[in-house]
Image (cartoon, rainbow, N blue to C red; front, side, top):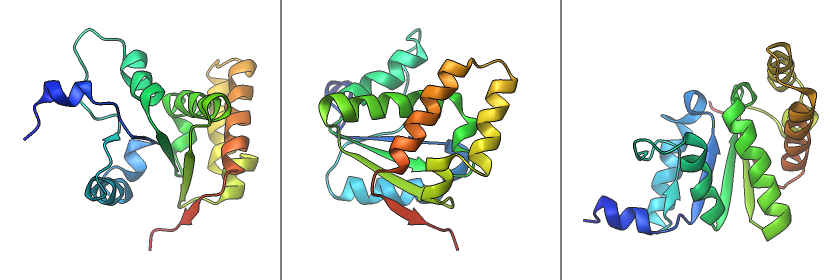
Length: 158
């Protein structure tokens, strides 16, 4: 059994970016089980945070060390500013370091994400109405467009 200290020294092989409320207890648990079974060390944001460490550092450090990223787009994904910030960084790492990015479109279409229609358009507009500056939302829109152009999987929950 690995201790938590040895776990902290390991770098994460796969970073999973997702909106927890949408997929944590359904698709994500099955995905993590499959990745674990394949012997891949997976980071998702419910890992233990060190007290006093800034959340942004805690979340972004494993992303910087990851060998691949899986982005799970879901209906409420774009309502999370954290998800969108992480997405921007994922796409930057893809461009700068050739980070492999595997998008999963869970109960949304590739077109909804790429074109920011339906819940994605509503979420971005909501962020703007709550005071998020246009430069930031433009970065989010660009990252969504770029991620929507990456070959991935469309999955619908039945």
